[in-house]
Image 1 (cartoon, rainbow, N blue to C red):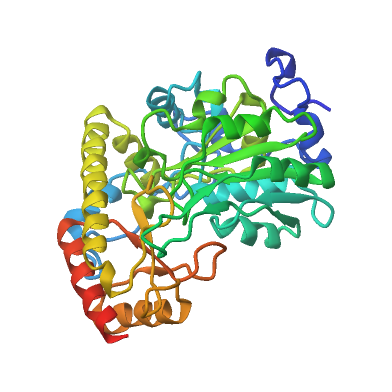
Image 2: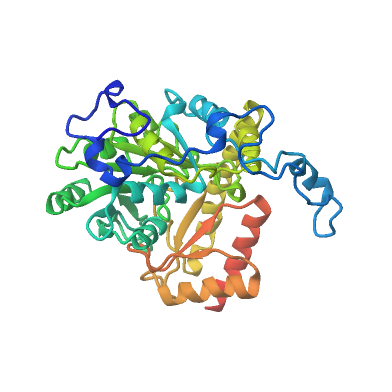
Length: 414
């Protein structure tokens, strides 16, 4: 059954064992997508979408709004539905990420919308499954439960035990175990990998990803979530694999390195057949006009230069934060866990004698930091391989100094 709006003959399949029409649910393949008004015409006297022709009624003088910062948004055509495709944004992404064309790009309301859409279009509720590699991003399991699909877990391997003689714990993908899980369960349709990982901060080598893509027993799609990729070393992104593999989908976002978490813009990069399926299935106007305006500005050459400068500052601050944490390690902190390829670090809180990671003490430290000292970090001790761990986002120079000072104070209390 062909994908509506696309001729598959234009896109030779690689690897040979992959057939997207066998991955997408039949009802999705048969779907005739909703055609919204702006799909037909975008200029002229627009009387086709039942919009309010008189415009919005928000007063720039409203006492609840800061007029000086709010006025630019009010000047937009907020009474009009937004562009359903946002090709100018996609074009700038293709240039930034060296992607063949805008037909390889899908935009979502954060990466979470893309994750949910992939599950809905590929995985049959009550029958099929996804595979995840904990510790990993929690929304994979949440979306799976919402969509009534099963979850197969293949935990990352942790080598070394942080806190024992200063040994640093390292996470790695267990490729052979993933293959065994696929062999044992043909209902697995998606393999979700987080690189760099959250909360591990560890990037996955491209050869490990390729090993799953090339595994001919697996007929589904490998999803690589690269929310933190700009904080990793050059050449770490799996986007380079998209041109050669129809069974991969890369997720990125403007929330992290771009510093635009509030606008909720996620990106999927894949070959056109999968992008067309996502486009056919999404809500008609999922990306708002204000979001699109800010995203396009963020992808301009001058903004990208500023972003890169801030990334360099955060990477340097990450190293300084790790050094400061090691300076107070005698109070009961282990070495960082993971490879620190993100804008955060993960540190185990140890027992008072320093012999082991201690969840009870870590919880006390976490709560005291937040409730008594105004410093909020994330307790991750219940994740596999993360016992006693606190995840600390790299902040500004002042924020990093404060977290060290407050952490030293609290560690002395417990």
